[in-house]
Image (cartoon, rainbow, N blue to C red; front, side):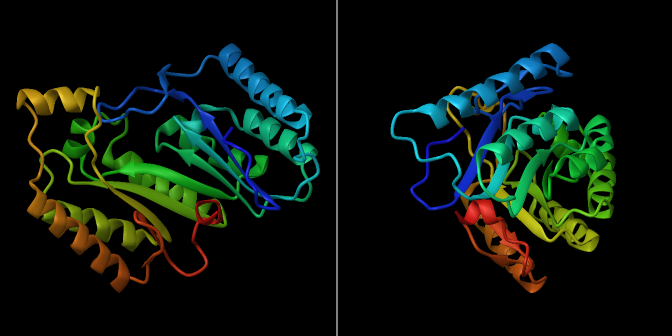
Length: 265
């Protein structure tokens, strides 16, 4: 969990450090586990709840009983957790703090298993999903090391939209290896046609020590040059604005009423 806020109410971020696989551009604190072992999942939940208890007991802590505004389950891949584990974590926060959170976000990958858990996540108390689409082009997904394909992403988004969540966000990467402006426009158009109300769009950043960084150093991976990246960024902003998604942070765009309350903290 993150550091304590000085605000009168609280926004809690919980890091779930497990992924099916680690993408070659990622430098987050994550571990590749494939399918998450039930014993490891239970131990992880125990430790999160224990950390919360320790924070509440710290000398001078005024956390207990403060209003709870938002919860964000990020990662990693929080959708590797079973809905019952998510429900257990959320219930531990509700017991510790005052009031029901206005927004509970869970990051989700559009794999078959995770999408099958969508109704269970809603029943567990999740109100908002953030789907790691990244691309709607199979070749790009393969180059990015993603485990899903275009059809999985489209079916996953449709399932999330149909499940009755208060809001839905999709992640999109641009300036990826081999990506063109035309491809980016096509991906954007398909997301907008689906009616996704929030988009997080990130220019691919090459982090030191990642496989992508090594490949770039060796010259074995070609990325769009800076002029193309700038045009992609400009095109993305103008297309989303024309579709009614206003930019409210560097990488975040939303229709009215769909901004992430947790981000805004």
